Image (cartoon, rainbow over all chains, first blue to last red):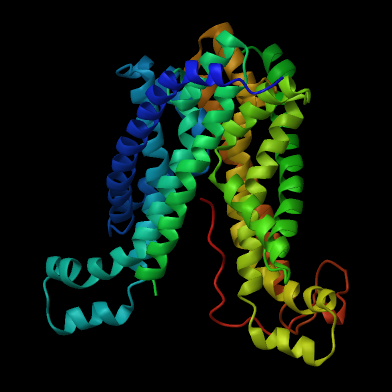
Length: 215
Length: 246
């Protein structure tokens, strides 16, 4: 068994298709995770028990069960009750939903991390509730929140190949199909290296951000 | 609905396989965590470099892709792994990299004066580690290791795609047979949640014991007497738990 560059040449066009799908899943999944996570985080701070409690229960459940099984659930069970979605759409929704429970925790920690004195100062200045959030709390929370959010984007990138198991042609999906057709190992190896090549600079960037934002 | 026959022939053994994969991968991952975590604080740059490279490579890698590669690509290089061990190695290598960051971070958080005191007492590097640094870092490690263990449990579902008959595999098999998707996948999710809950409960016991070892009060339950040297003086404030996954 030796490395064959001709096989690599054959695979490359499909590799780029896969990269495009992976990046698409990552981008939209990130948007869902960031937005939905904020909704969870704010709902968990609600004073109404019947808002807070179900949200805590649902997010805990999602966080403590495997993304892979959640993808199967979305792909095979949800169509029995509602709309059936394409593999890629299912994958994006699954990734976004799963990681929204992690980002909710990040937002929560970020908001809790703002010193209590800041809330008291806002009260002392009799700022309105909206003004307190906009002008005092959120600007301080955001600095703490960006590095861990970035870490979860990288984690999401590494979990994204799971969408191949429900038939989405991301990097892994393409490599798997190509390897099955040609009985070669080059495609899988290239995809493995590609993940490191994308994830490593990303984590360096996050570390640099962490140093700048969180003293 | 699911037949009881299927349950006993596939599902229950599947639960057992999931537990086994978790235990083996956790053991491998813990060994790698400590080896790499300690090596990253080595005084020799070459050791630090190799350990750091390991960390960056396996932290950047997708566990599923690594598993596929070990299962489908390694045999073509002449190294055939049983599916179970391909899965366990991929999980252990990946989560070991995350765990090494926990070990490195909590050792780095031990107050420098504690290490200096060890040097002043003429302790060897190994004695300082065993008697001063690890006992103080250990309570800091337990909560993030709990999180990591839950991540690992969820990660074990991946072995189903390389034909290891864990509970996810059993669920997929049953779907093909019956198409009763709703009860199957609901049961699966609940089972994983229960296992995660049990792990959290177990780790809370470990956490309590780890914290008890720090103070001066003697351990009332358990019956094991601790060596005096295994107790640190105090947990220094400001030491943070190491970053989690990702």
